[in-house]
Image (cartoon, rainbow, N blue to C red):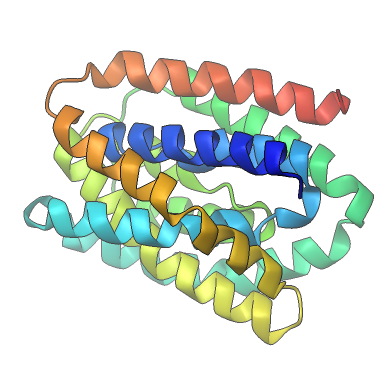
Length: 236
């Protein structure tokens, strides 16, 4: 990857870390389409690896607000669906990964924008966990189902619970991807190189997460996701 592309990716990761640390969602929706445009081979390992330190930080920062019951059901379903996500990745040809990630991003954003308010129960938790396990393992994008479940809960509960669920699932997905030869060590090297950008975005989110208008931030993330997903699909 060229120095210019790495700089673009660093800025993208820093902005995405700030957005997710502040609002509870948006990292993969921002990073996956940009990474797919720069180097489709980065998906999904790079996105999964860069999210781990961010979600570890957010889950710890707001650990008192974690919904343990919901997180338990989501994580169980997420882990059960991880092998199916790997099978989906095997079915997608290398040249089609950009199109698939773009389509998944656009669909996730549209569903997030259009979904009505509802009170989540056990079925919603299990369904969100299963869909997340499938899409995140295959593409690195898995946040919208969890955001839909928690979108009408207190912001601290959304941020902390989504982060905790992501953390467990990302570790499981990465372990499976590397165990089956789908993971590239070079993607981890790139993720480690961008740790300062992640740390900067996370630190800024600590200063801003009590002040931001969560609804406006969420809308900006989803609009960006729609545009970047369409660009990735069209191969521009």
